Image 1 (spheres, chains in turn red, blue):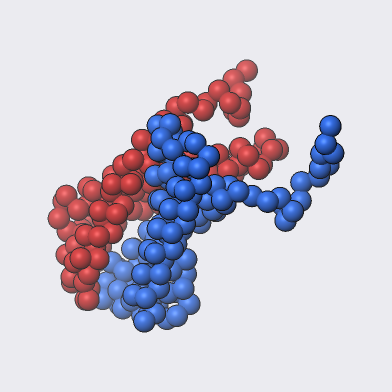
Image 2 (cartoon, chains in turn brown, red):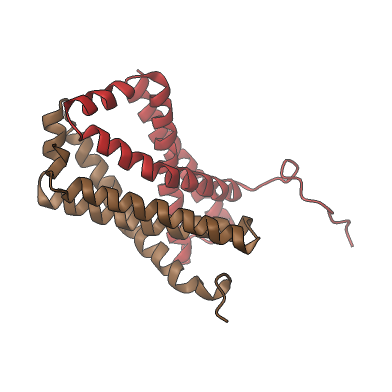
Length: 119
Length: 124
């Protein structure tokens, strides 16, 4: 039987964590500084920030890197502190659903039929 | 042989500075995880229309949401700086005791500066 938990899944996730960490170390300060520099005071200005395709794609890619990074991190925390296997798997599932749901939602906001979110 | 402690009381363990940076890295990481769905929700509301945008900006003009925002700035800054330190340690850079201690101080200082700056921008 393949074990659902244990130390055999570590190297791949470790690499994912580090790779996404490097991406986020560049992307998050970049995005935050861009947004702060162009700080909009009204709705139209806010919306305009998210209309260019490159801005949508950058935000989405950063979001996916963030979700993957958060998954590995939460998994590490649960591996250290939550020992009953059933509870741990339930928490894994909750984290995966939260992150996947957030990313689907983000994609819908960015690329939905109403670009930038206008109704 | 010296007498060893038989229980681990978290309040009696003297954690070295690098240990504090590490623990705070975890706490800030968990905090940032919780923020992800909330941030997407906030983005959704703020883009839902003039009304939603005004609701969001109105919310963040209140002191309590601003305090929470400041906490998140701290979390992101600490997690980022401590994470960079981690990446350096992965590359076997700065693993010596003195160097690791100094980089821990640097992480705490840099985080403190960013948080102070954010506090000034948010509350002054």
